[in-house]
Length: 364
Image 1 (cartoon, rainbow, N blue to C red):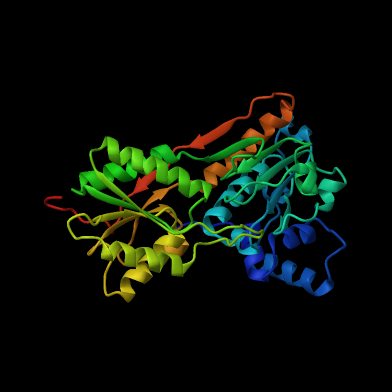
Image 2: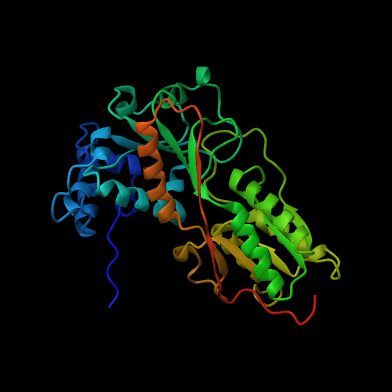
C-alpha cells in the first residue's frame, strides 16, 4: 500500500485559501494575523495532519554546524500570488522544507507580489540566509529603486529556479541543455525530423534557455526546427502572471496549422506543463489531438496538472523537489562562505518520462 504523502506548508496555504506568507506568520506566531484567518490556517493544518518541521523528527539529531548558521527564510516576489500554488514550485518548496527538517527549524516565508515592501523578518535582521523566487521575465530594478533588493543583497542568498540576467547571487535550477538534448533525441528516435518549439511567454528566462538549447540540439541532430513564439509584452509590471495565457497558445496553434504540410513540425516541445494543458485544449477545439495529429513533449512533469490529459504527455521531469533540497545545501555553503566573490550555479540533470504523446513515424 502506498504511503500517504506528508502535507506541506503549500498544502496548508491552498486548503486555507491564503498565501504562503500568511501560513508562515501563523505558524511562527506573528501577531499581525486576524483571528479568523489564524483559525482557518490552524484548522487546515490540523485537517491535513500538517506537522511543523522541528516536530517531525522522532529523535533529536546530533548537533551539526548548519544548525548554528542562523535562520533561513524564503521570499517570493514580483509574481502573482498563484505562483506558489503551481505544482513545480510547490514541489521545490517541499524539497526545501525537507532539507530544513534536519536543521530543526520552521520556514519563514514572505510573498511580496509587487516587490514593494520589506518583510519584517528581513528588515529586523532576524534571518541569516535567504532563498529567493523572483520573476523570470524582464530585469530587476536597481537597488536604489527597490528597498527589498537592497536588503536582500546584504545577506547570503540563493535564487530558486530562475535568475534574471542582472540578478546577483547563486542559483539552483535544472539543466536545460540536458533537457533539450533528451527531447530532441526522443523525437528523433521516434522518426521525427521536423520539430517545433512552442513559446507562449517569450523573454521568460527558463523558456529562453530551453529554446536556445532545443534549436542547437535540433541542428546538431540534423533536424529542421521551427520556433512558434508569441509577441513580447512591454513594459512588464510586477506582479507578473504566474502562468501562460490560453489565448497565446491558441494563436500559436493557428500559426502552426497554417504552415505548409511539407514543412510543418510533426512534433512540438512545450516548455511547461501548464502550456501543455493549454495546447491540448487548443488542439481539441480545432478537432485535432496530441499524440495523433502532432506529437508533444512537455516540461516539469507536474502530474496534478497533466493527469487528466489523454494521451498522457511524455515529459521532462525537472526533479523540483531535489532542486529545492540542493538549494538549501548551496545556501548553507554560501552562509559559511559569505565573502566568496564568485557566484555558483547548481544544475540538476532532468530525466525524460516516456508516455503516449509521441507517435512513431515510419518516415519524416
